Amino acid sequence: MRISNNITYSDFMRNLSTNASKVQTTLNQISSMKEVSKSSDNPLLVSKIMDLNVSLSKNETYSNTIADSISWTKAQDATLDSVSTSMLRIRSLIQSSANATAGSDELKANQSEIEQEISGIVESLNTNFDGRYLFSGTNTTTAPFEVIKDNDAIVGIKYNGTSQDLPREIASGVSVNLMADGSRLMNETGTATDPENLSTYFNDLLSALRSDDKDALSGDLLAAHDTYANNIVNIRAQIGTLYNRLEAAADRNETENLNLTETLSNKQDVDVAEKYMEYQNQMTAYQATLAMGTKIMQMTILDYIN
Image (cartoon, rainbow, N blue to C red; front, side, top):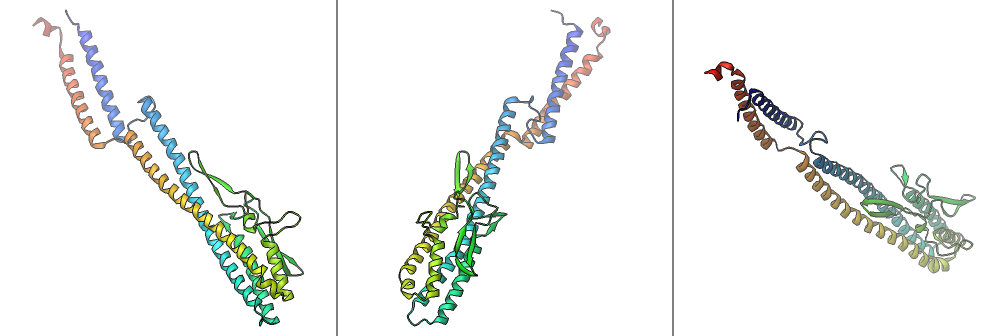
């Protein structure tokens, strides 16, 4: 079968175009350091790369949430540590005031110091973290606690926040509640009409100091103080448990981030050494095609007559 010059030229041009296209693709990959630059290069691979990028973006969001939650719990722990110190000092002052030898001047001094400690507790519980109050529930822009006074005398404290914690998603389908319900610190055991909480306790304590009721100071008030102080310790322990969980979540998040990054790199990034060898082979084929083409193009009718 006779092959015409037209067929030879067409095959040559097609092969030359194919080799040139391969060389150009490899050059683009080397220069961009990416396996694909547009979806038409490899639709399936591009789809997987897009999914991995979405997963990495979500992972980064979870990482930021976890980091913020850890900082939140640290701030709460430091706050409750200060409150516990104040409660311990108040207990010491109660014991001192309940002593039968304590005179009126000592009672007044102890009362004044206890009032200062109560104000300090309120200031600590009103700690603001990154523009948000730690113990105001979902109403994070409002100071949760305030001191109630009657004629400049402290008669208790008031909670102005909500009774909800703050939910946070730390992984796909995994959520935690950041402790934010400051009403739990009040430890309400009474009713709406007859409350019995930290506020009423402080009121009863200061009233006993003003009236020099040593029996109440050494009895019910001292026992009640331990109940409210232990409640604060228990809440602090719960925050510590949440902190440990968040730390573990942070470790898992970091591991997942590394795995996703490595997988994305394997699918998206080029192996420079391997790709350069591929480029060299393709250039050899391209140059060989060009060399053969110059010989084909130089043939004339005289070559066939000879």
